Length: 342
Image (cartoon, rainbow, N blue to C red; front, side, top):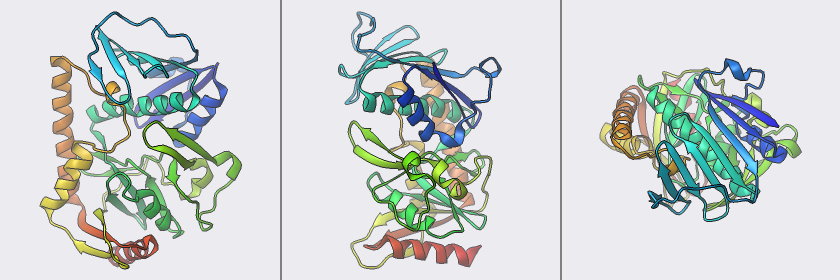
């Protein structure tokens, strides 16, 4: 039995499977958070995920579907939630104890489900502890956290890679930095996703540290394990109080521009990318529950997010970036801007 123990901030996740290849690829996804020397009995109420390589359909209740999305058909029975991924995979989860089982033989589908299930359940618990995901990329430069919100397909990874060509830049997160109730930025470095790997980005052990995730609705993406760029990844225990917060927009021009932004416009972006969490990598069937208890929990999460992103909007220097045709020029302008205010 292969075993992974992850610690995402204060959240422990225990993943067990006999599927060796799946265990190895999840290690790459969450390399910065591995704590395999931890004993199971020492874990504080971990999220448990057991993955079975099985073509057999597990027993599911005779219930009317409680939810149907493009991902799955969901059935609820008490604390148990059952999901049918249209015959490609099946899951069941006890929403009270956070113990889940995943069944299937489609490697790519099971990989994606396991990855998103971890982020969904851990993310909800982190929300309740005052640590909130922002759909943005973030880097550190000489003690400054630069956080940039962009829509999906907006070019976050491309801009991040251009910035990482500067040896004084470190990655805070490719996709979801964490923001606390005081508006501070916490690193959350998952794998780095990109289309092409520039020669300037030195990667150790390319064969082991470059891999792929084939996503159900977004196609295949090339990934770099943080182990391959570990000297360019920020310490996960760091906290940043000096912050530049940007919202970037595509600009149909050969040149890019950086301008000051108002509080109202910046908070509008934070509301969309943070409070609502549009674009954040989760599976809604593992985050959203029915009933008045979960309504109270979701209301609390909404208010905690509002507080955190309001605090960030007050603490940070606010700018907007009109990103032209050249990501290299945009990255150079960002570094020049950070250099002036450091």
